[in-house]
Length: 272
Image 1: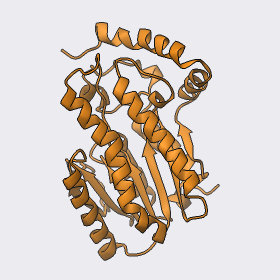
Image 2 (image 1 turned 135 degrees about the vertical axis):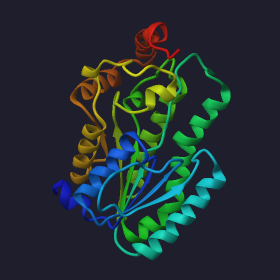
Image 3 (image 1 turned 120 degrees about the vertical axis):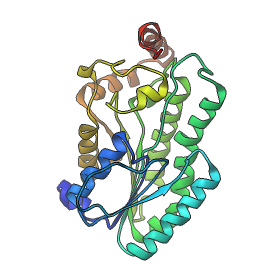
Image 4 (image 1 turned 180 degrees about the vertical axis):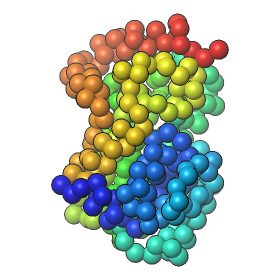
């Protein structure tokens, strides 16, 4: 197992989605702190507000729910890499994603379909378009899933299903890539201090701080898993216990239990 610094400095470039806030922003800050010269290409709507003296960041404005904008973003990334970092392994971090809390299709069907586009289609499309470059140069595909991937999630039904998709897709892709110089890592955080709750229609604090992690904690565990060559990591020991238990129980039973737990948010935590 290499150290975090040794692992991160292997990459000449990082391509990340959703680096403007939350886990994505923490990925950028942590990676650049460990490897100041690394080129970072961020695809998101907003420019990351990161105050670092040495930050080789190229921001590509991109609405990941748009097929055309994503394709244009990929072309921009490939051009930037060719000019500024033409050789060496690349770290691709599929980080962007959002949720929707409520009884399907709340808040509306358009929101639900946009979530499917960002959480699933954009991940698969971006990875597929960049895979030839990754196979040529080497690298790792990190995809941020969730502990919601391990059980049905009533009131977050489509969100949990999108994360189940990317988790299983990432693990399967890792096996398909054996024998190449590319591998994958699926990251499964639990409740984290990000903008997720607000975007999903929930108040911040819907989950007690004792049950959550900071974005920095999630990123450090992710990078340790990357350095050790893992294909999957569930961040936080409480999340590890929860996912281990839920994975062993019948899914209809887990769905019923999850409904009772998540319904409490609907009674007291939905944003007004």
